[in-house]
Image (tube, rainbow, N blue to C red; front, top):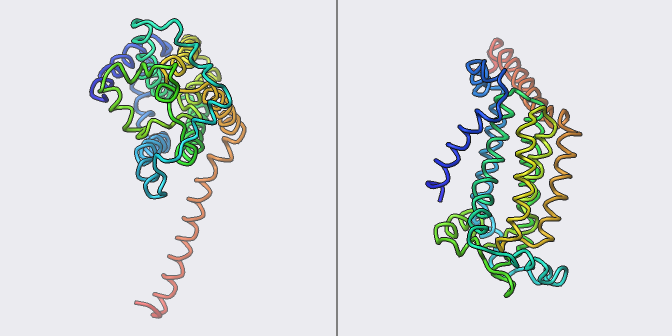
Length: 289
């Protein structure tokens, strides 16, 4: 599925550059690109890679902890909300399903990736730091839920809800199971948490046109996760709470969190310098060779 989505995302990012990047930054591309690929942005690339590896390793982690498909908490979701989510499919149509699938698969990915690139290109370092912190925090909180509190998708749990996304194509089903092996990564909803968080971060900038786009896309994503037979309403609420908590932590404690690795590195450097000084002294006295 990535072979299909990647060129589409690249074209969307190229088009979005001309729509959403302010003119003053377009006129200074050389400087902006040089800053984007400098050591200043390296920690954020590494954070994104860390999250990607974390997602890819979910199955290995679940197997290591002996957490298989025999545990499922979808029954509790039914006790909480019944089949209320089925109302979102009362007006289902092929056209709406295709549009919703595009928003869920491509619109969501584009929102996260382009937000990251846009913050880098416009050199909004503080918001970029907050976005990265919140992004990583959401995954770190959600992963234990997916391993220890698995909840099956509504389309394969409720008889009144059709798995509209997975019925579109075997390629889609295969692609989704790469990051969600048992189709039970429901609570909390990452689509809800990450899209809402990204929108909140964009609203901390002066990028007016992308604010409007992010708001519309985020609202559309909340609809699609319920309409396509994937998430429960409780999942969306959990994702909203997770987005708000991660946003609060990132914006309130950004300086402290960013300073932590710097403190660790400076401590390591001081200890290394001390060890080198001791070794030099011992070597000069002939105590070591």
